[in-house]
Image 1 (cartoon, each protein chain N blue to C red):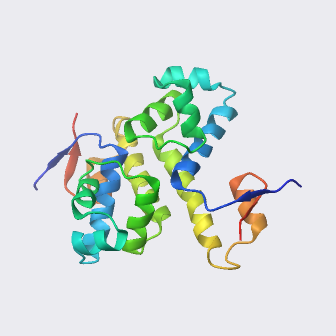
Image 2: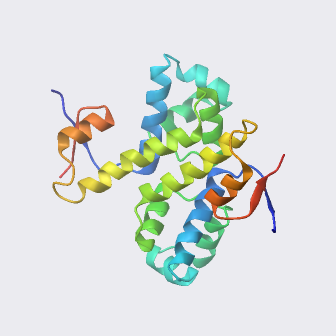
Image 3: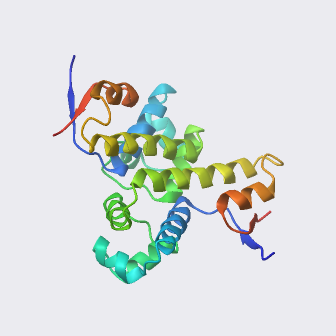
Length: 110
Length: 110
């Protein structure tokens, strides 16, 4: 199993990962979604990589282009943060469960 | 019953309202929380009023000062957005329920 070391990601990085996963699950390109959200391809890419903080309005436009409610994205981000917060309490969450919940093979950086 | 007309608030405005409600429920002043979060009082006030977009790092610092997990704040914001999204589908949510959930007397601007 390949393991990705996961430092405590910022909210911005979680938002980016969630948006990218949704887009990729839809089989859509950065180009398609950036056109729909009226944002440049480069900027959308930076948001997905957690390098840029998206404004509320831009986040709404991206969610609209992805046809997902912003509330769903935020709940997913909150779920991910909740797992990370729980990891700060030793033994609160087994690593396997964390990986399963995040849908990726990862461990927390200790 | 006094009714506050509620246009579709942005995520930024919901975040501000949730943070302010938490602070006020704790009986704490803007001064106390701004000192704890190492942000200026004026900037925290603008965030609470939804006039400034808080970066992920600042949001984490404010939540830390308020001693609430960021995940909890985001879930609350997502819950509020979800209700507003449901209101976009006519008759999906009775106005009374919306007001009860948001904890204020308000109706959506139609």
